[in-house]
Amino acid sequence: MGRIVRTISKDASVVCSAIDGKDIVSRIEQIHKTSAVVTAGLGRLAMAASLLGFGLKGDNDSVTVRVAGDGPAGALICVSDSMGNVKAYVQNPVVEIPLNDKGKLDVRGAVGTNGTLSVVKDLGLKEPYCGQVPLVSGEIAEDITNYLAVSEQVPSVCALGVLVNPDLTVKCAGGFLIQLLPFAQDSAIDQIEKNINGMESVTQLISSGMTTEDIALKALEGLDPNVLDDFEVSYRCDCSRKRVENALISLGRKDLEDLAKDGGTDVECHFCEKRYHFTPEEILRLIHN
Image (cartoon, rainbow, N blue to C red; front, side, top):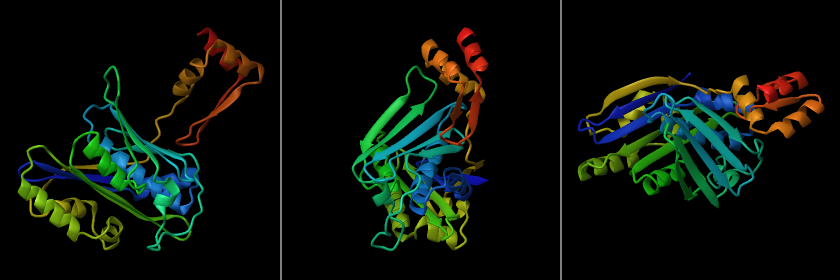
């Protein structure tokens, strides 16, 4: 299971959530058979969605984060519930490109730099909240930071990292999200900048043996932080036969009749690749119910 730990400064003006996402990203690789660079990119986005979802209030709230860039990976989509459980999908799971100039997986090259990052929050209202910003880097973390600053006016710092083994399994994955509340003092902002500048990358911190709690506390070092929450999170798809039935019904009577004449249909969930088979008789029952 993954883990999210949330810490808060003593004056409650700064919050940091940190995630250990190795199990989540490993599940992404297992389900979608992603190449190394796509595992890294989709893994980063999944952890970002989990961190954003974890901050929602309602039990049935959810957040959908979509990156649509001009890179060969195509669209990346992740959905998180309010507990940080997340599911993910990528248009093109296998992308093979050279390492970047630092000798690391070129997530920017796979995702692209021209495109958009969009966030849809379903908060149980009549209409969901939607925000969209242009991509600024294609590295995901910087794009999330920019989205929060521009679309939600929340000064934030996001860091995400995924290390992939030569056999394509996930060595480690994690990240953190620092958010400043409107009443944060300049001294707190200065301290956060000092902390961030002095920290190694997330994967280096994890590889050195630091826990999620250690990272969350280190990010707020000097602000007398305390642990606010500590939850297990996982890759979790909430698809069901009933949901698929509702989707089929939305096709309309004629399309359903055509499916029945063709001998039934199979529907596959993009997020978990579970298949649902519907016989002609079952499809006809959907028409008459």
